[in-house]
Length: 159
Image 1 (spheres, rainbow, N blue to C red):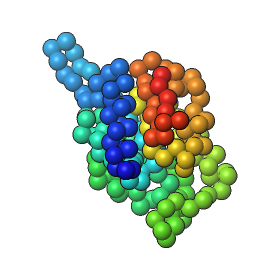
Image 2: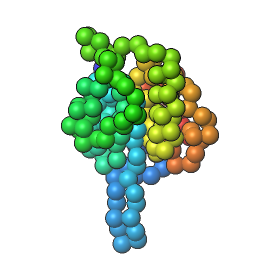
Image 3: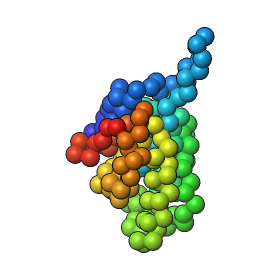
Image 4: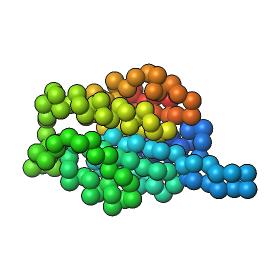
């Protein structure tokens, strides 16, 4: 179901965003593509990345686990390198390991900047990324021509 959730989240964002996802060049001018920022590149996040890429958006994604960088880039998206030390961030199970409070504070500061620059930021796992998704300044959400999406209906936001 995570695959379906990632796919549908991007379709919902594309439908609600008051601009096109792809770059369009017409006789009247050029319409720049939407910028999608995906937080969390697990199953749902990777599907969201792939769907946004197919729709023509410029996609950037972040995950704490360093192994995910290759997966994100293999889909054509840019991996958001926050400059944080994450080499020990992945458990043997493949899931992210808990980090220090200082790490999370720096991570949130860096991601909020990228989140606020995206026209369609997407939080693929609100439970895991709630620190970022819940602490985004309302001023960055309530900008015109933006739609923020979380895969949990209780945390979905639209501006």
